[in-house]
Amino acid sequence: MNPPELGMQASPRASARESWRSRSYEEWTQLHWSVLWCYDSQVEPYGRHADITANYLSAWLVRRGQVSVRSPRGTLNAGPGMWVVPEPGPRRHDFDDKTHLLSVGFTAEWPDGSYLYQGNLGVVFPASEHPALEKAALRLGKAFRKHLDSGFLSRRQMLDFDAYADIQNHLPAWIGALSSALEGLGILPTRRAVQDERLVRSLRVIEAAPLHEPLRRESIASSAGLSPVHLDRLFLQHLGHTVREHVEQRKLAAARDMLAFRNTQIKEAALSLGFKNSTHFTRWFHRKTGKSPSHFRSEQGW
Image (cartoon, rainbow, N blue to C red; front, side, top):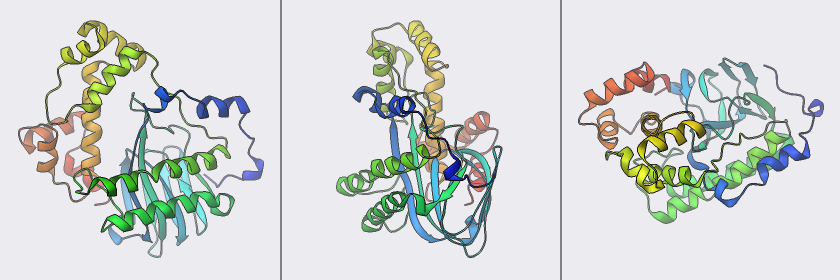
């Protein structure tokens, strides 16, 4: 897949831009986002060649070297001065031994688990066309360096509230800059906000529940003033899956996040998610993904 020629791209219609920029406050509160990493350095040897399944969004500015990304959507090739925004999901990346990246990874998901951008990424474009994107990434990176010893965050990272707020508060500006750049390529975010207030209340209960504690369908239904059967119907109608499946998806997403970082041990992840031991967790993870936790982790390049 060759880098798009920006001058040849048709601009999105004003009505399409308005449809995603203008949403109710209630809709925007349903978008869950969190920064995962931000670094500006040479790629470590262990991460130069890897087959991974990315359950997050990311963008890389190539400072030096050559980058190649292969996915079901095609192949992206980029050199210095180019931004690479790969599609989430399975892919292989290859960086030469000189590759230096300004890289940002983050999550941004709607209640049904879909990404803010889904099925329409896999692009390369010149950094010179969108200088605000690099500036936003550098500000985010500065916050990382101020509060952390590395450019990565994990779920078990210990930090005070001021540090957490400082880092996370830079993410909206980054997402805004990235969205503006992608909009110039005709790529708009997905729109998956939920309108039914009963479903919104149920989703909030699920999101607020500790991952290590059992979550009964009856208690979720009670918060929405519905019976468990009616709540399942509501979930199926709007999200395409049952309450139990939604809870399992949330737990699986958390498991993948934990395993994507080297400092979260498999036993620690198991206990954090409410499993009695790592054996039960491994069986559950394999049943859900077809891979063991250790295999999944090795695919991430660790």
